[in-house]
Length: 251
Picture (cartoon, rainbow, N blue to C red):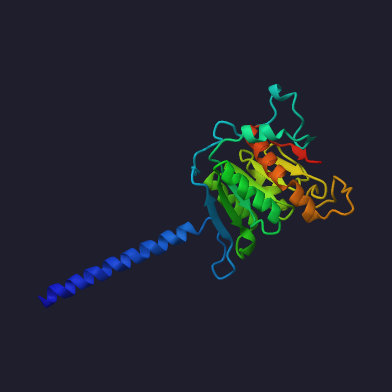
């Protein structure tokens, strides 16, 4: 009887050990998406979704960015500055169930981040936030590239921080759509859409391309003024299939 009890306890301990190892492995795999040195301050990946969001739904599977075609002759060249679309078009043309990957925490652009979160909820999107700033043993380029394996519909950047990473990663992943709000690439490609406004129009790290004419305005107040329009415009244009343009917002 005693031997049977000992064998039972040994079997239970073995099962507990196996379960613990399996749980540790699964947690490790879940954190590798944007993880750096575990001994350093780690980058973070968080996901928020509306109740009706459908991760992995391939909302844009039928319309990937493409090089210019003869039928696109009426469209501006990639990188050209264009007028914004109407609010009604921005609301009507966006598919439901998008997966949006935000690069950076967005904490230095609170108005844009709040507008993006609100818009994501409205269009039933899944919003994944990947902040690679804490990585000690992987570059931001490597971490962002690793996240692209999740096949997000849009990769978004708020402001100028991280612009060099997006410049390099976007040119190496021409089938992925990117949206930059409040800045633009030095050399735009057909898969990158930018939205700019007075006080937030720098091309790469160069000076502003749209002068700020209101001497009383600050970059924060201007961002708050244009945030919702910028988010709606960027998502709507990038999901239309006609990507690669720079939209200039104004009053």
